[in-house]
Length: 473
Image (cartoon, rainbow, N blue to C red; front, side):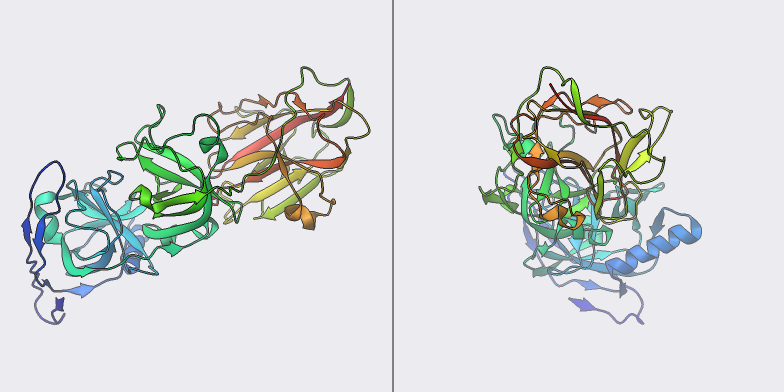
């Protein structure tokens, strides 16, 4: 790689000999990687993003067209060989421990023949436009106020191959550590698994081959080391779309990015060799399932309709433990007589726009002695305000000692028979839990409703809870 003195006149010369054999097997073309002479000044991906932000704040423009001789360097981390990327390449600034990444839109397919994983590239910025497209820092040709694609005939004029092909080292991260500064970088998630509802049972789901999958299949990955989830997104055009999801626990390497709408963090793999979920030692919670009772009991052991609570204040009294595991949000009294009306006063928990990296909140009943009577039944109702990336679970602990400091250390088993409102349920509807049979539980214990956000407070939604009753015959 030769660089001219920036004081000299700016002359940009890309010497690329591109020979391609076109056939159905996409043979890698013979490309003579001659030395590339490029002029101008190098700018980092981070500085490029900062220039865009300044343009947006100063002039209100959503895109920035580069008119000076600048270039960025990067290493390719994406591959469209198996169809999971289309007309784009992702690059990051270093092959290991990257600081930033970006997307380049190119009207050509496939691109892996020319820009394979690890290939160092030099991107001439003069004449290109940078902007935030689908939540991602993106460069291409200007198309009004949007980022358009580079034409295939000119892609080598702007994206030149260096002779270096580096080994890309995935950056190990926890799901909770992921943030916008890491977008379009190659990461590794350890100790993760697909949610049990997706892979266990008679019919595990595929990566993106279900009837309801349109454009992308979105499958929830959950961490076994923290209470956090992220979506694995797979194109419905990917070669492996109809493969069943890996059922075990392990590691996944892929590109950390946004979904198509730019509102939810995703991870996207180049191929299934990056999915190493081989360990059968899953970390699913144990389940307590006594079934569904035909009717509630006649005698009320515990009830809560929240009508005595103060609107906007944390839920308290009546033996409740209202515990914040992470973040600043808590279960609070809520009233609304609008389209998403509450049932009088209800309990509400949500992380939307909280500003927190993580929100986990518990609402736990007082201790219940299941040996004092038989045929206990639990019922309640839930609603949501676009639950989105958040989740609500019903849990039972036989060993929690009542101390808020030990909530996360106790054993919490899933009460799997309960029906809890889902994100695709109609906005504002109140969903009945069913008459949950508790008769198979012995000894004493606590019941808890646990809210967990996905870690993206701009996306997480809200749950409401009301009309709780524990009864017996």
